[in-house]
Image 1 (cartoon, rainbow, N blue to C red):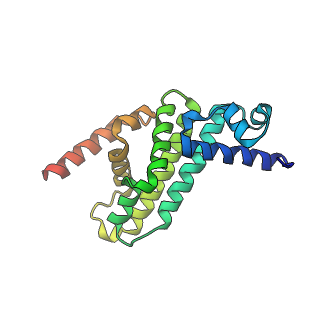
Image 2 (cartoon, one colour):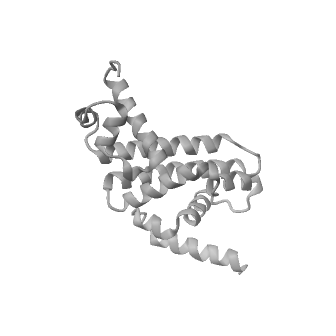
Image 3 (cartoon, rainbow, N blue to C red):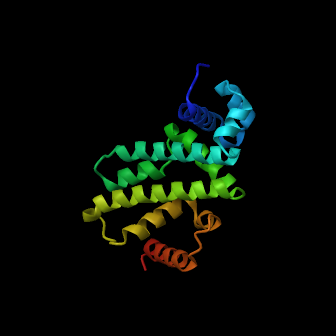
Length: 186
């Protein structure tokens, strides 16, 4: 490998980690594997990242942001179609779905990954809020933030949000009650 200055070397390591994470999963990322694929010494990985958890979290965040931004750029004009794109399962998104699931599982035991996962969820929420706000004329409910969290909760489940320390039980109970009323037409 040719000489790279410090920022370039760090970016190279991160890019290798992102490729491995997307193709093989976050749980397969080890310092040895990254060093071997990047063709650098193990010490270089340790020099640029304080821990493998930090590197995994950073790789996940960059991939999550790239994926969400890519989805956000495509618009059909219909709010339901746009929201379905971000919340639905499509074959092209399977590597990202595996990535999010892996990050979610790791977040339950790793505080660094938990922080990264929460940050990605807040970004996801902001994108959903943006779509809802731009389509507010077609939506009857004025509570954009609440709707975005309810849609996210449908996708991730209230239990997962609770495990990530979003501990506002009054909010959850209100959302569940509202959803039940909407579903049964009460």
